[in-house]
Length: 256
Ligand code: PGA
Image (cartoon, rainbow, N blue to C red; front, side, top):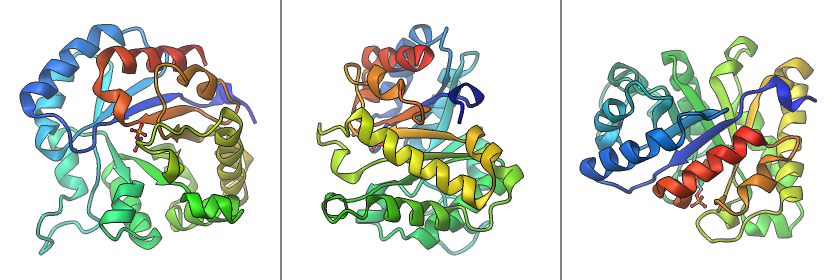
C-alpha cells in the first residue's frame, strides 16, 4: 500500500449552512488561503448555493460539489435533484450516503449504491460515506459493518469508474460531537475499507483509492489524522465553515 499513489482530497461539507452572500464571502476569503494546496480542495454546499459557489470559485483551485443526489434521471420525485442537473450547473462532486441522510432521511445501503451509480454515470465524483454508530463500535462489529457498507455501495461499479469514487469513513459518534476517532482508530478502519476494495477489485485499485476520514476533524487534530498511511484526506463539517480553520486542514493534507 502506498499513500503517494493517491490523491489527497480535503472536502468541506457545509451541511445546511450559509446563505448565498455568506457563500460568496467565505469562498472569497478561502481562495487565497488554499491557492497553493498540495491536495484537491472541494466544498460541498447546499443546492441553493451551488451557482453562487461555482461562480465565486472560478479561476481558483476550489471545486464545488453537492450534498446529495437522486438516482433517477428525472421524473416524479418531488424535492429531489438529479445528477444531470448537478453536472449542468457545474458541480463536480457529490456527497452520497452521509450518516445524517441515513439517520434522518431513511437512506439505506441500497439507495446509497443507486445514488452513487447515478452520480458516477453522470460524471460526478461520489464521496461515499460509511461509518459505524457508537453501539456498533461497542458491540465490536465496526470492521464488518463498514466492510459491508463499502461492498454494497460499490455494487455494480466497474473498476475503471473507481477514479470517480472517494470513500469517506465517518464514525457516526464522532460527527459534530467534538469526539474525534484517534488517529489509530481512523487508520484502522480506513485500512479495512482499502482491504475490502482490494478484495472486490484488486490491489492496484485499492492503492489508488482516496479514503477520507471525517468526524470532528479540525485545525488542531488534522495533521495527526492525515499523516496516517490509509487516511488520504478529510470530509470536514464544522471546521469547513471557518476559512482559517479549513485552510489549516488543507495545509496539513499538503504535508501529510
Ligand atoms: P464534523 O462533520 O466535521 O462537523 O464532525 C463531518 C461530516 O459530517 O462530514
